[in-house]
Image 1 (tube, rainbow, N blue to C red):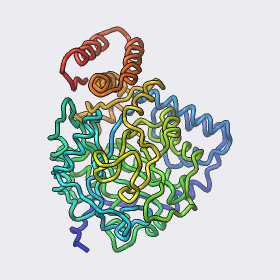
Image 2: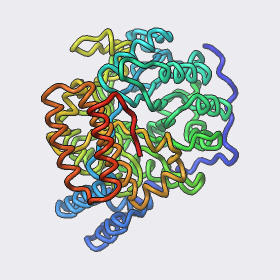
Image 3: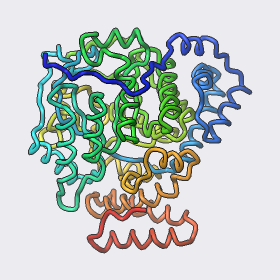
Image 4: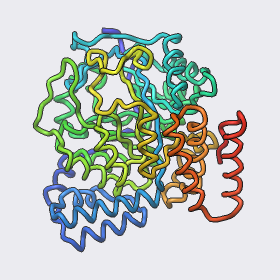
Length: 474
């Protein structure tokens, strides 16, 4: 096995997940209607919830109170994010991995996996294919291997940003990769990283040990838990957390995510920009333990409670889920989805209509093309957005929180969503999708109060329609 570099921690690394305390919260939370409604009212004031308050919501069993949670989540989602949905695509760069996580098809012991790492030419070809479909935002995904060090990841970032196909360009490159030391995070920051995303997978210590062998880098719980603290100390102030639901009790994982968000807020002054909550899916060479699988009704509660618990944070629901569930979840919490996704190495140019499981980390539930997803969103009254303005004008980290926590982010989100939507409609959309999009833009403009912002937005939309000018953002 190749030698891994020495592991270093942040300046004040601490394991802030107390399993016994979180379990105690869940065992002792006895929600009554008045208490639940008080917690909901706090959330609707856009204040983050504590783990104890989150435990109370997680323990609600009364159908009427559960419906109150969903209704509050719908209102909060609309108040903070409006009706825009951010779109992105995942791009897998390499699936070599030194870890041996029991639930993952990329695990080192899986002899059925087809191993591959894209070279820079192949990476360019994937980016060109994505640009030609209309994508502007990517997340690059890497296995944990010495071949995928910070220098290699930074090279991939620069390659992606350098590709311009027709009117296409990638304006935002996020990274999902192994935790790094401070120097590694500085290297990828200098190359132009957007959000750095790493999932703890499970916050429950015994479960973590069960699934992540001790001889692997990922077997070190604290090193992974501390990754985002190191990223922040190194200058990466836009960070994303996540847990893989299905490894342990969903209520505990929910409290783990909320605890992590509060830790980052208290320690770094910045909560996570995004939270992901994927469910375990079928994967080649993997046997799934059914003990903690999360059924749809409980999974929807996870999303609604997360929306209430961390009102300022973007919630990502990936194409692991079916179109039907994604459609519903958008209404009460989700603000970002991937679309037109293929997770085979080279999948955007080489894969056909069917999935190739031996080349995937897991099975997807939604492989519809981007245009089909866009059209459905538009018909449902949602604004598909490829906006990247906040990152490019410096509204990240603490500054993003200043806008997002009180809900003022809508002042930028809706206009920027409409300009990026217009770009897509003019440059890439099918006739049916373009018609649906143009109708929605008219409707959204009609909602806006008259004034300088509306006049400026109308001028920008007209410029995109009638000229080659693109990338007009507020």
